[in-house]
Amino acid sequence: MPARFDIRKFISAAQVGGIDCYTLDEGPARGVRALCVNTGGGLRYRVLADRGLDIDQAFHHQHSLTFLSYKGVTPPTRALDRGLDWLKGFPVGLMTTGGPFNIGGPCVDQGEQLGLHGEHSNTAATIESILQPDPHAGRPQMSITGSIRYGAFYGPNVQLRRTISSTLGQNVIHFLDELHNAGNDPVPHAWLLHVNFGYPLVDQGAEICCNTTRVEPMDNDPSREIFGGGHDWRRISGPLAAHRGQTSAVGYLFPRPLARSGDTTVAIVNRKLSLGVAVHYNTGDFPRCGNWQHWGAREYVTALEPMTGTVDGRDKDRARGLLRFLEPGQTKVYRYRLEVVSDRRRIEELRKLNR
Image (cartoon, rainbow, N blue to C red; front, side, top):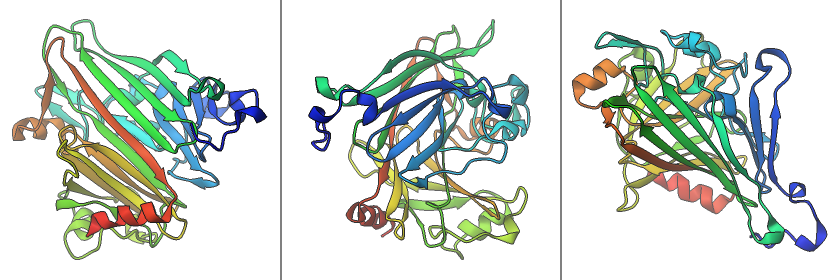
């Protein structure tokens, strides 16, 4: 436990950190269950139980780490499962998960119509446990565990158990995702971590840090312009008139493993603010990391997106041999974490990923 918390000087752990649970009660967000986590180290983030235990708001002290959409949080709905309708309920936020049966663009795969990024974000969780920190008992850990069921009568039937945890005084969010095929048949499986960053962390002069073996732009002109070799995609741009509307650039990064285990790190850092966020994950789980860049005025956002396949559509991933499956009774486990960095030495270490 961090020594700076002198347990002789407070009686309630909520004075130094912990988890608050509440229901949003106004506007389009009315009825959505939320859990606000205060790590006591400067990091505060909000978990949306009714939106797949994803995270929208996230702050380090006074600085927002992410981008929030104009519409904000809305309740989950299956009505947004077709085409690009997912975007109508996309709060953006620190992390929105894609999957579990498909990620990426809408398509028809073996006769099945699939919408953008799948159904996870529009599925509510059942909260199984909330663990509060107890500094007086020597327990600085705090966590939220919930389960999500996706399915239909004849299948597929899959359950996710997600645990989100932090430690009092530390600015790290740990994730444990366990996806279990409870059905009788193999099911297609895809998983994507849409980790989104916004102003003031994202600003001119900030940098994306990634020790990538290569960069592949998506097959469109904006992506080729940013990721095609004539532009330094690592350097954050100012607002671009060319990115008004739906114009965005997406590139596939292939980060090198930084350890024999296959673990790697991608990050965004802002030296002016002495602030950054690192995404730590395993390249065996997520061979590609998408980088979405959308530099429209007032719609100024970038994302790092570790993913199991591509965002070109499940039909294309199937044809390329990139589509994964969950066998009956199989459980697939993903472990990853988001680390907020405010130490200049640590920021320089992350910048070395670009060398």
